[in-house]
Amino acid sequence: MILDHLRHRRRVSFLAAGVLEGRERDETLAHVEACARCRTELGELRAVVAAMEADPLREAEPPVPLAFLVGRVEREVERTLVPAARPRWWLVALPAAAAVVAVAVLLPSLVARLRPAPQAARAAIPPSEASPLLTEDALARIERNLAREHAARYLSEAGEVLVSVAATGVDCDRADERLDVGEAPERSRALLERRALVVSGGGEAVASARGVLDDVELALREVADLPSCVKRRDVERLRQEVESRQLLMRIRLMTRELEG
Amino acid sequence: MEPSGGGGDRELMARLAAGDREALAPLMGRHYRRLYRIALSYLRQPDDALDVVQEAFVKVFQSASRWDGSAEAGPWLARITVNLSIDRWRRNRRRAQTFTPLAADDRMATLADLSPAPDRRVQGREAGERVAAALLSLPERQRAVVVLRHYQDMSLEEIAGALGMSLGTVKSSLHRALGRLRASLAGEQP
Image (tube, chains in turn cyan, brown):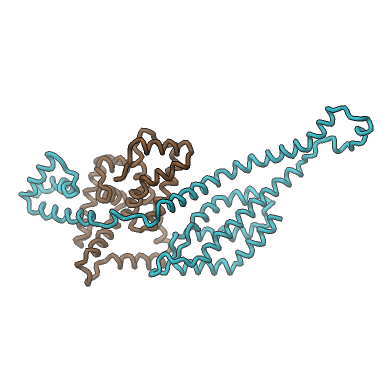
């Protein structure tokens, strides 16, 4: 009897789960009829299944309307596309800007060379204007300005994230004293992914911002680890940390400096 | 189950694969409720479940070009949702281990909520909470099998397809999971 019971034990589970059919089902039902232990087991398993099938979560409705969720997904898709696009934008924009400057500078002198000019006017052109003017210095200046603009934008966005966390007063779980920090953790993660490009891509151009960038990184890492519904005391701790480092003021000053 | 197959899903997936973001909203309209219920049954936390659904659709958009056009979208979406739910569960558990004092408070509160209260022993809600606690104590994959079977009414074959498991593994997982649940609810050591 015990051996028979063990052989049918799996089938009793499947019978309770409603996945047993045909001959196997008939055989198992016949076995259960003759096996008191199996009947007890089947009864208990059916109670488990019935409890799950009565669980209101089976029919739970999402707590937000579809349009809201679609908006969140579209914003997230947009955000995931932006970091990937940035390096391409960077690589394309710089040579394009250089090419535009080169054409603007070289075209008049090229036209002047091709068109026969009056002797007196030709004599008036200084030798320096007859040669290309896009020097390495000019290129380096463009590159430096782009790097600083990029760093300023990064710091400005990081500041917005930190302010949104520090200023949040929206309860998401009043009983448990939790506050809603919205999308700040996701935004922090996206910013941290861009950080390497800002720091290593910026090189000496953003050297003066290194201290602020390091402190911002630490703060963003803390925010990135938060759930969207966070204990009030954790928000308070983060707020105090930001205040003690005067981080928001330093971000504002450094952003202005980088933007020139 | 909500509509999972048919030309609608395929057409929307093909549009997504071609980078048409306009296809996202109708695809979400067809599946978001079902995916939310899968994530919620797995995680038992509405906020986490909503985040998982959001992540799932972002992932769908990102990997639409790699989707096998001959496959049904429904099981594929279920698989993404289950995998993300498992990831979220692991991340929450890691956080609980890293931030011990805070997490310990939370966990104790959760366990206290779920443990049987003597004065409410006969109430149906308490039974539901005990089922929830028993489900959360299951190993990750066993819980996924139980959720898809008993919260989504999927057949064993559909579950095997959705989770990328063999039919035999699904059967073993279901048998073990039900045994554990029975023991947990009976107050035995599973």
